[in-house]
Length: 131
Image 1 (cartoon, rainbow, N blue to C red):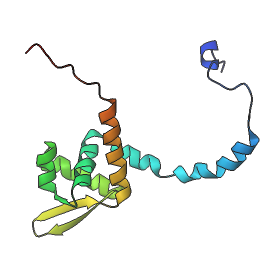
Image 2 (tube, rainbow, N blue to C red; image 1 turned 90 degrees about the horizontal axis):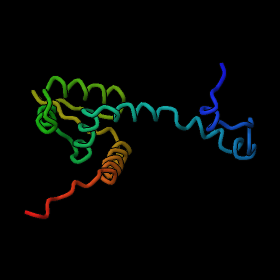
Image 3 (cartoon, one colour; image 1 turned 90 degrees about the vertical axis):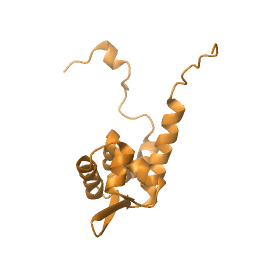
């Protein structure tokens, strides 16, 4: 299939520029296997909210998480179950209550870094100084 001149603008015209770097870095490419799963979980607004809230507390009850994020208990439970199945959250049952927490600190650090980055990217809203 022919490539348009515009599409060719960002494509290398050689097969390999630096063999040494390619050979040195190629084994590291496999290290990223499984990373997309984490970012897939974070790509959903509801799950990102849940992970963020869980990163701020040791554990929270499903009903409290639902109240915090403004969602139904059923919807929140669904997303928590997905997070658990992805290996990002864990739960424990105590009587009629189900408590969730993050499975490890890596996810906590990731979401907190993401939240911090998002804050930096927000354009400040001008304030009316005329009262």
